[in-house]
Image (cartoon, rainbow, N blue to C red; front, side):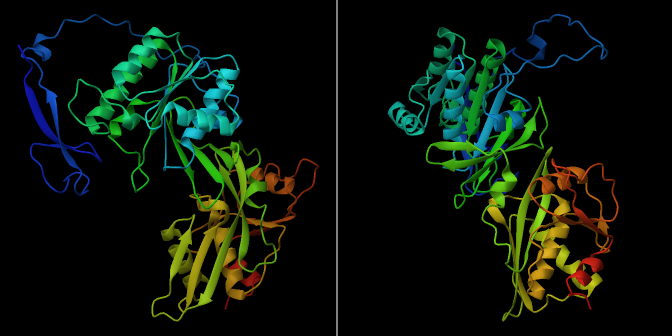
Amino acid sequence: MAKAQRSSFVCQSCGAASPRWSGKCVACGDWNTIVEEVSAAAPPGSGLAGASKGRALRLESLSGAPEEAPRIVTGMPELDRVTGGGIVPGSVLLIAGEPGIGKSTLLLQLAATLARAGRRAIYFSGEEAAAQVRLRATRLGLADAPVALAAETSLTNILATLGTEKRADLVVIDSIQTLWSDALEAAPGSVSQVRAATQSLVRYAKSAGCALLLVGHVTKDGQIAGPKAVEHVVDTVLSFEGDRGHTYRILRATKNRFGATDEIGVFEMVETGLREVANPSELFLGERDAKAAGTAVFAGMEGTRPILVEMQALVAPSGLGVPRRAVVGWEQSRLAMLIAVLEARCGVSFAHHDVYLNVAGGLRIVEPAADLAAAAALLASLANRALDAKQIHFGEISLSGAVRASPHMGLRLKEAAKLGFTAAIIPAGGELRSEAGPDGTRLKLNRISHLKDLAARLGACD
């Protein structure tokens, strides 16, 4: 007897289902994202009442020495840093990013590096023909790498190929939104197709013990397209970020079952592909104008890695009734709070000035310790003076104007000393274990407890 068909209306943004079509999704609020999907209804007696009895499981205790997960060292140190030391066999990784940011280039370089190291890598392309992938490989100098390549979008054909071929160490699917299964009547890229393809591929990766890397699209808001269930199923979610106006690319882990989620990998897009950046601080400070007014160097932390980046501020007289406040690379609300603290606690007025703040190099900062560097840049621009080019800043500013201590102060100072900086304006509190560079040089520390101290130092306080 033919299976009964049932239809539901599913939002393609959040995956919420509704019994009827509507123009706006009641769950996420997006317009024109609800699509009718038809699936086979469950046969009678398939519920819990008709299920098999099952088998009893052997329960274990929490005691015992933990076993370290085996790793596949990729040969790309920046990628190994983000994943926690390498890719775990049998794990599933989802990498997302804007179109043209370099996801396919990164994965092709990864597959070629592993293949040259003697491991088997298979690359399935659903968005490009095999000839297009070969052209990219030739441009990147990877044409001689023994990577198995196929251009296919059928989930059934991909699983059949993986079942007949020799077990691979790495399987790349570019991208998961292009796959479709003939068991579903929904269009490729729909919620049901993406969910079914992901679950089938994850089941294969876990049973075969191969590492699976999926490419995911992003929405206009920068979120991973498709149902959130995909992010819950995979082991690691990687975000490939960057600005097309800059050559820098940031690989960031937002979920990692086998490592930390606060590490980043830095790459530079060059003619031969993505080049790893071992010292991002030198890259972000390479084109710095030390004599410009309104610039301050912030010593930040990304995971266990200290990174020095330049924060640029421009405070100019405004002819508008409501002055403009614009920020790139930092939170808009954080800038508004900082300006309010400067006006209320330090007597520095920005009421008749436009304020622009920019983080150089295209890096996005979310760390509260950047408050002090941003405040120094704003005050220096308002006073039209250049700060000491060999001086760094970091520290969190509270609503009372107090400068609070930041974590990893010693690592920040040590990185600054290594790059030739000689002075630092830091919070008065906080323990310092080491602020010396590799050659034993130490920074001159100027510790402040309130934002008024910084404003007075720059001559901007009433």
